[in-house]
Image (cartoon, rainbow, N blue to C red):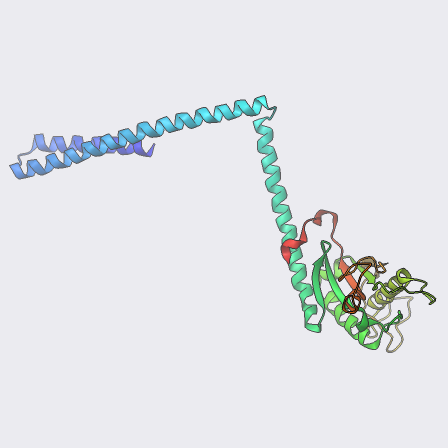
Length: 282
């Protein structure tokens, strides 16, 4: 359409020039200048006409290709309207996944505050995980939290509890051991030890803070016996024993591997609609 308008514009200009030449007296030099202008416009017009013909041919070819594709889709049993709908749904789902990924990026940024107290926030097994070294929390073979462990957990609870988004999320406390056999003690085996350590960690995190007012009908926490004050409805505990090592394998672990594998993890649980590959947000 633009080239068609250009052609008519040039024709009108040429007509005006011819009228000017016919209707008025001009010197030979002026006449020659006008003639050159007319010649140039004629050449431009021919070029525009040639380009227009080429564009029309390309347009006709493209239309033919579109019709051929429609025919192929129809033969393949694919309706073009359904195809457009599928593309639209894919685009919508892609946008939803991008929004979920951004939500997890935001959650990780919030949890990264814990790196200031020496903890690691990582993505492992497609879950966002706060890793707590076992030797910081517990003495060897014990499930009672050390004073230093309580201090660390208090800082974790402070970060999670003071954040309106994190405080509403679901977490699982996961206990892990090394591959050294545990027997003859109160926990029977590594499953029992890891589960009881996870339970002790969970109980501290959900116990009301010492400075928190008691709820109606409930006792206030004894002096010096308060915990993290997190919502118990959002927390659960699990024990994995030696089955999920960070380093080495279940069968073979060096001393350094065993130190890394004795740990407690706070695992952020995704909602059903948030099941996507979290490796993208590392």
